[in-house]
Length: 188
Image 1: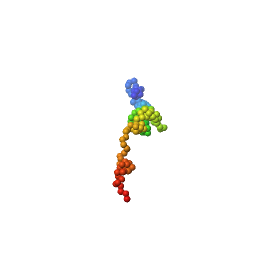
Image 2: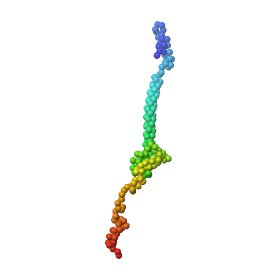
Image 3: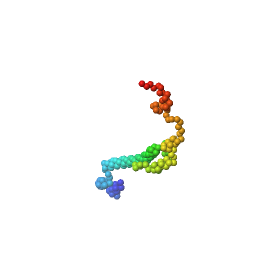
Image 4: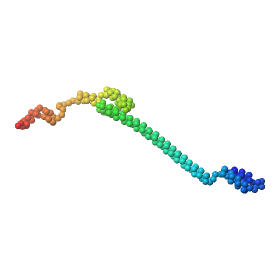
């Protein structure tokens, strides 16, 4: 408010008397240059409040954007994990199917002999599994049906005939029973 002091000093004489009319006239001329009207001041204060609220909203929105970015990153991580799990599931299912096709008697035991890291499953098929299964089958033939069936035929003793005698048609009965029952048949 130095400008007011300067005007008052300018219109005060050496005796210390103020020329009020001249000071008031100059104050009215200089006031619009140095003072803001109350309505303009209040309007600027309201504009400033609105601007501050907008800045706060934008900050909150930016935080929301950060939250959204974090959620997107989390979903990308979950998607990548799901892809890895899906690939592993496809690999294990392909190995199980191949073990069944190869005639494995115990898939779990046979699967333990396969290096799953060397098996690759893609849309084109399975790579690295046939070679391993062939090798496992050669080294451990007892784990597969063909070898087990041939062992069963050679090592399992059999006594008598197979099946129950006397059950089914007359051809399955021994010849002695046919002769014994011949007198019971009445011929017309």
